[in-house]
Image 1 (cartoon, rainbow, N blue to C red):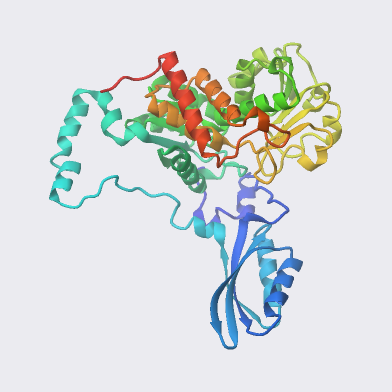
Image 2 (image 1 turned 90 degrees about the vertical axis):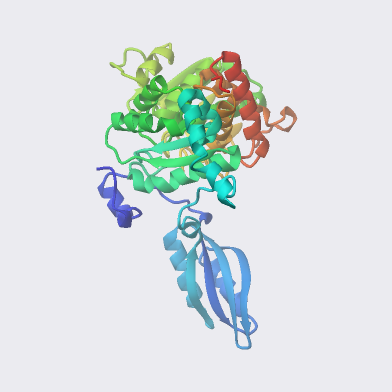
Length: 493
């Protein structure tokens, strides 16, 4: 029942009818809505100038102009333009077509083109040039490898792709900011995740989108496919099912299982908070952190901050602050009730901010206002991570907050899971780890924060760039060392 028809997958009205919140696009032109407009212009002075002026007046941001063809009376050019959303791109096209001497041949959506045919593929590691190569790679030579694994099962980690493979598993119930769009619509996202695994961690990851309706079906499917994979990355699975699924798989499988929406976010948040604390010259042990959101990310952040020694943590959900005795909690929220808000403070997140040091938003847009941030302790730290619209916009509190981080790439200090999951899995696979422990997560956070030298720390630079290629390697080494120290590694030939 979760699947939606492919031809309607991008229709906001169809999604809204199913209770899916279609996300608002950014107000500013951005690359995710960029288009390439192929135009024919009269080969006369001023033609290009009139066209670029019209595009600018329509709010388009020209990224590039390429010459395609020149004839005596006509020039063909490609104009690459950043738009704010598809409707804006159409408006830009119409304005371009209205310019005298301009004919629009086509408009290419650059993002949709990038996804044509999918973003990943499978390639052989060794060429098959002759019969000898074929005989070793496949029958009859491969039978020797199969028998070796049958006699010594642990050697599957040595002689197969299992040693370097991760399943990126989703049921499509909590995809990005889209919500429950189903497994088909989740596939482009999981492909992208697999591509990031390869790009930053050198790991062969496969998108596994399951058309199921119950947590136990996800558990059974992943358990059944375990022979192929050296690790399981759970992705975009709604709470509370995500907690049940992860715990069940961790107890049944002897390979690392990691829900990135929970733990990846938490690891990067801790890394950023360590450095933000240095900027404002405070210790984690002296801080009060208020978390808006008690879903997957909120629970994981509360746990890792608690393990890191944060002094006081308050978590709020839709009904207000969570505390022991508010109600009969179950599952992850029971842990929050028992391990946060020791003073059993009542009220909501806004009230809890008074005198607090850190606001961490993992909920939705507009949860708090600048006036709420103004009640916090001096030099407050604001992590507003909701995407695409944060809990409070950075420009609204830039004169109040000492350090601001978001989940967006167009503001400083982006909290991005890409800093975490490739390195964590790389380290776990390299060490032949059988699980990802709390100690391994803390080691990963330390490695990420250390990637920014203390001499370079500033309010706008508390976390390394996602394109810092040294981060994944540093995280991998730290995670592998911790796995070995804890003795949770598998010994194979």
